[in-house]
Image 1: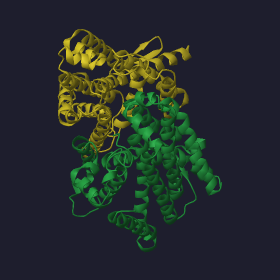
Image 2 (image 1 turned 90 degrees about the vertical axis):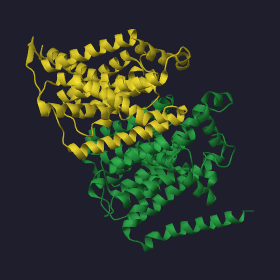
Image 3 (image 1 turned 180 degrees about the vertical axis):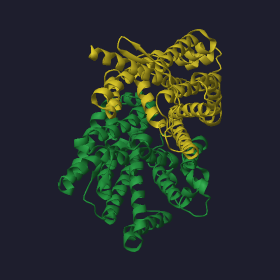
Image 4 (image 1 turned 120 degrees about the vertical axis):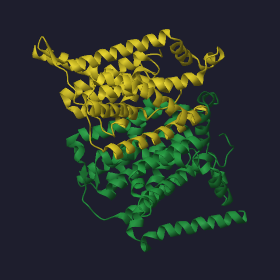
Length: 330
Length: 291
């Protein structure tokens, strides 16, 4: 039933997937770590997109779920509890936290919601640094070190694919339609019989699952966490800026943003042909790029005409809007 | 007796801290209400205000209160320029898009300012070693520098209050806060007021920076944590309200000082945020309504 182009496209994606699965066998470990981080940011960014893009509530503190789960995992794992139980506990604690905090926070609207969540990151950094007996304070927690980029690679790949799948499913589902209508107008959505509070809470908790999985995995991979690593403000803002750079509310945006940003970070700033002063000012350049994206291309990079034209050409044009299968409410 | 003295000293320190917070927080809440922009760059302007004071003080050795007279007009201009270059292109977007764009743009500029300052002036902390004699009153030691700062903050707040109540621009700001469409209908030039608000708000942040650098030290990375504190204050007090920012700032300042004294300084912000979550649960719209 597929058009010919579509069949080709599916074949292409299957080949890409096989290539990604085989990558660790053939390439340098350096690239394995690079891809691993890419998967991590795709996962965090895409799940951030569930609340920010689909629901319209900009959760600036999305990274908090990553950190809570990482701490939950590390505290148990350092006491010798088996891996699976640690992981489950980390994710469960995050889910409970997300459910509890969603009640007061989702009563806030727009900017206030963003602000309150932003404050949450700092709060957790401080709490993690203060509870010395429990979290090891600012010293952090060290786990038994080990070399495990390959296991982590497949784990993060799995989580990233799961996130991408969920982000692909949401716009096609009834749940996604409810989210879109809440985003456009909350009162109207309520008048049409959508249980607004339950849907908002559902989206918030759902979006917290993926960073929780990645957080626990990251703690296991790096074998060391401290408040600065998992709750640092600059680290928390990185996935958010990736999504906004790529394009919020689109399926492709977070993926494209993460790839774009990591490639810039890896290649441009480690290259030898750039003058030194530009490289030492690389954060300034990044900031200015961000600001100009915000000013000139509010929909993100994927909606810029050359990029959009490219995606249309390869048959992915329908992913440029926020809802790609159902009627366009955006 | 000694207990009471400690108590009074802590209250004084907290009030002073809160006053410094309130000045900058009011600017943030004005920008948030009038322009609908979430200005994450706000703390950076405080840092820049402190940095300018540090540079001028290092070069000339003038009294920092005199430097205030240079800093205020300078940062009004900076605010105008900031609005013209970065904010004007995004201000007319629909609300949700404006929120996204304002976050992207202000986070980008904040990163750029932090990185550039740490590149040029180095990441070390800087302070202005300016001291005034201490006053002893009934066993309570009050630094007269801090007292002068407190008095200046009070004077500025009173001035702002009357400015908002009496002057034409102040009335225009209040009109926009109450009803934007209505204000446009009766002929208020909203874009001009918005530009003006950016000027006021950013110079207020810089003034807070001058007071900050006199009491503590500044480094290139203090901006973001301070912005988060202001955000807490704005939400605590209710946005667009001078008295709200003042009360929010004082609550936060006193809570931080007490927590810092009794539990250790690393607990101070935590207490502030628990207060915030409590207020959100009980009174999500903040303690005060605007102006």
